[in-house]
Length: 251
Image 1 (cartoon, rainbow, N blue to C red):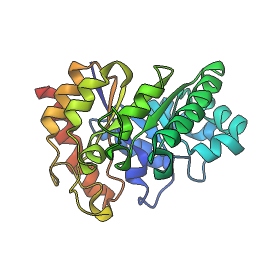
Image 2: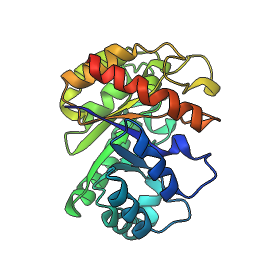
Image 3: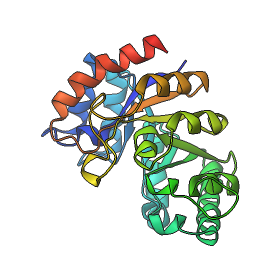
């Protein structure tokens, strides 16, 4: 059964330590959290807060450059949390502009996935919107070409809002790659500009009910809410928690 989590980047504007934010989540629907760093706190302090709250460390967004330059310290920090899923949040648009570029991107991320697997971690790639540009070959989009050039060593963390912003039907992609998607980013969007890449749930054009049903049918493990552009994290948290409960109950 797919379970609810939140990407902690959504709550970064709270003027409090991350450990306090974790405790704040005990009054919500969320059962797991996805990290983007630790703020100014130690992995040990974060691990203690996870134990206290019962929240599960679903995964962590870690930049590809960080994994290139500070690999050992990074994986050791997340090992301390019991967090064994590392997500590359973006590779950059230049990695998806041509068949050759996509092949290079796929090769680099596959090599990273192998390295992480050897250390007990699973690797995932999180899409933006640009991967859904049309590609002049046999594939529908650059994303499809990328998926064809990688395999299940590299999971696909699928962001439904960003896919919709990129011009595709996210349900179609959730169905197409269900066997590689265990982490789904449940986001909403208004296509047309970067300032509406993410909006609060039901504030955009994404068919949230259909996306949640597809994630559940595909046996995804986690449905991870994010609004990376919110300026009012308290309001986003207050509205998203009951809405996510409704969506999961109806799935």
